[in-house]
Amino acid sequence: MRTYRNPVIGGFHPDPSVCRVGEDYYLVCSSFEYFPGVPIFHSRDLVHWRQIGNVLDRPSQLHLPPGTLASGGIFAPTIRHHDGLFYMITTNVSDDRGHFLVTAERPEGPWSDPVWIDLPRVDPSLAWDEEGHCWLTTSGPRLARIDPASGEVLEGPVDIWAGTGGKYPEAPHLFQTGGWWYLLLSEGGTERGHAVSIARARSPRGPFEPGPVNPILTHRGTSRPIQSTGHADLVCAPDGTWWMILLGARPRGYSPEFQVLGRETFLVPVEWVDGWPVVGPVEERHPAPAAWHPLPPPPVRDDFDAPVPAPCWISVRCRPDDSWSLTERPGRLTLHATGPTLDRPGHTFFGRRQQHHDCRVSARLDPDPGRAGLSVRLDEAHHYDIEVSGGEVSLIARIGPLRQVVARRPVAPGPLTLTVHCRTADPLPPSVTSAAEAGAGPVGVGARGPDTIAFSADGVLLAELDGRYLSTEVATGFTGRVIGMYVTEGSAAFDWFDYEGTDDEPVVPVA
Image (cartoon, rainbow, N blue to C red):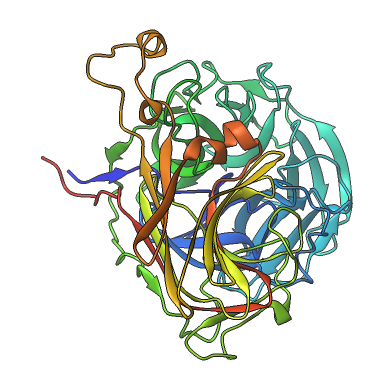
């Protein structure tokens, strides 16, 4: 029997939503303050996913003002397919127009410019009934009937279910099956208290009756390695089996534990019992779906030979055309400074999500005549940077209000290779059997933090830093680490960029 490994999409890919068209699945995630926005993935089996683009890939679709806060911007998209057209609906919380939807005939795009919908709250989702009416649900949860072509609200909004009493009832998705309309809802907040509940009615207008057992899924109060499970979406496979896509986190280190990758995308099977969905705990391994379509691993190296950036590359808030080029020096990514520091908005940054707890990232940099380097970023107030300028390489730590040059050394003129190596902390010593014992004795820093981040230039180590300060529990917010190239003065060219996950295990058949 084959098994698959969770998460199915690692790293900062939260608030997943999924739809199926024939034998193909398409999935989108939140992108917050990053541009382009809303990464979109394709799969044939719900396990192996490949990013095929970003839904919001031009300024006319996604405007993130310079004052957009970290963890602002794009919240919780939903993807659906209806009458031959793909729909993606989301909320730009940094734009007072709120919800908008875009459409496309092909999931790779191009996607349309936004159709705005004048309704409050977040987490919009779409469903259509037999009469062709389009229903929009938002957090609360609330229901409205809309015209998806114009965004006009035709009916409502009205409250349809109070949930079970948990805080932040959100991520409502409506599904119709077996003569019932099911309302999937997340409660408890997207932190450790996260949970998924269910209710049903004969009409999308309600009245909704709660399921016999709610929540149907939560890991709160458990010692499971996957926590914060919630913000779920359901999909039915061609063979009639049902599956739940949801977010979760994998905290590491000493109490309260630290999540550094952000909220990730997980998959769990669903059974139906007496007309209600039943979901087991989200395990690190599950029996695989019947369909099985593995994909080749993504290349470790980007040589910047393509005419456009790969879809995994993201920038902070915007990506001005004059801030980057793949043609100015063919075979290199040339970056031009748009701001003097990573500590404030407006800088030039090309990054990708950290997707493995253990990983090695390297880039070949020609810094002349600029100030440039590699940054491990959560936000403007939480980042570690290895930077080259004026014949010197420096390691800079920005933690909250403090900024310090941790190490520096001279380097020869010309190109050099910068490396960031994230490795998980050693587990607690075998003799330590509880957190209380760990707190009572000198178990060392390595037993407490989630990971250690080492920085080197041309193979020479500058320093190692504690990874806990680049975690959600320290920085707050909804995102995870992004590792990328930047320039804050002049220009710099990057010949290549390597990303290699070193903790990845292949999915293999087991007896």
